[in-house]
Amino acid sequence: MSANNTKPVYPDFTTFYEEAVKPFKTANHAAIRLDNKLKGNSKSFFAYFMYQDKKWKVASDTNISKLDMAYEAIKNGTDPFVIKPTRDHKGETLNIKGQPIRDTRFYVYSA
Image (spheres, rainbow, N blue to C red):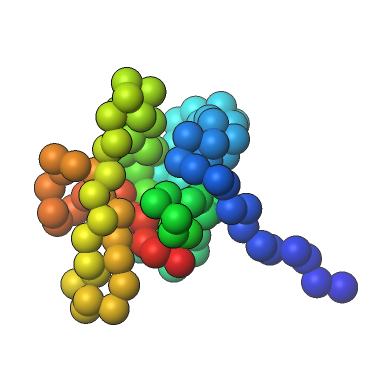
C-alpha cells in the first residue's frame, strides 16, 4: 500500500496562504521556513497555486516571512508578483516585486 503524497493545488495565492500557510504557522509558530529547518536546500515542494493561468510550485525552503509579505500586499490590493525566467532560461520563477534578485528566500517556480 502506498501513501498518497500528492500536493494540493490551490486556485490562487490567497487561498494557498489561508489554507496551507496559516495553519502551518499556527502549528509551527517558531518556524522560519515551510520545511521547518533553519538552512539548507530543499528539493521538495510544499504546495501549488495558480497565478495568471499558470500552476506554480512553492519550494519547502521558502521563508514564511516572504509569503507573509506577498499576502499583505494582496490584502492591500497590490499584485506583489513579477514573473522572471530561471537562470537557465528553461522555466520561470515568481518573484516579489522590489526584492533582491539573489537570496530572495522566496522559491516559487512554474510547475
